[in-house]
Length: 181
Length: 168
Image (cartoon, chains in turn green, orange):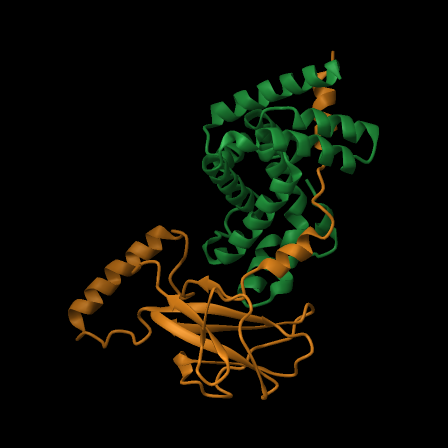
């Protein structure tokens, strides 16, 4: 899948990382612009809350910047930063209590509605937000990000068969939600 | 009943866009320095394992044959990436305990398109203090440093503690 910003800068992610490691922050800004939607989308899928998702996505990029030396250029940058995002989002939920659930649900509805551009987009975004994070995140990674099951498993810390099962169940659940809308 | 192929197609065309100004906020929030590992000839991330093992074996035999060299003076050093946002500056210097507060010793490169000046500096492990000198006459405390300490002369230094992850 061609990322929307990649057409504005012909350099590959790997080249941008190298330039960034040489001290050029602008290269990292390009990486952020290139992958911000993917990282934010995953965070939305995992948190079901756009405010939390924006925080998680931002933190993921900051952490990625801090450990850029550890990035293995033999692998794609996007799954790497998605994995960072997934890990810290899971950590966030481990630390949190359930007291925020009602608040999150309220924010979720409000924010998603506010950003919806058209009916199709709105309907799908809302349906996705109604899926449990365990199903929504794999579904997004599979069909919106176009990742393979092994990549999904690595990002979410689950096995390949679990990734396949969750994608299948997520698709089934999504169809039900859209039918009932 | 929704056709699943159609649903997959809809999903593949769907994109949840990050909030407006997201990338700018990320860039503003980045730390002013970035810890990094020494970048040498040794392959990173476990690549080229076989050549590395062959090299290690060769080194073993060389060490048997040659008297030991002095250990590297750079052992225990960590590369730090310093950054300061100073879009209107003509020159930014870095002074600290690691260069005896010597002016002109470390000059940051920049500014880049977003007004940032940067320098990567090898620091020995331990505690360091530093401050930026802008245009030769303006002392600037690193605004993103976590720990600060007055220097007793009216300025405030930033304090960092540097440890190589292998030794921490």
